[in-house]
Length: 103
Image (cartoon, rainbow, N blue to C red; front, side, top):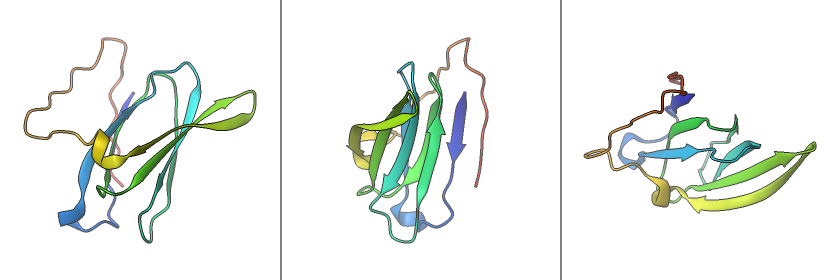
């Protein structure tokens, strides 16, 4: 499932569009860190795709969940997973349903 989330708490000039896909076979919990006045946490199911807005210096923490425990599996700067909006084309697979969320 593809989801898009827009954060109303960020200044327009600071926002970048980021993308994350859960390519594992485990549920993931993602958290955005290093953003003042904002706490963002979301559950991402296997195969799920997510577009979200953040500031370039935000940090995305990715936790893998297995057997009731969550383990930090990856930490990425949002600037490194930003979408190149000028030339990006999303081509979802046939198995992916599309859904859009605007917060």
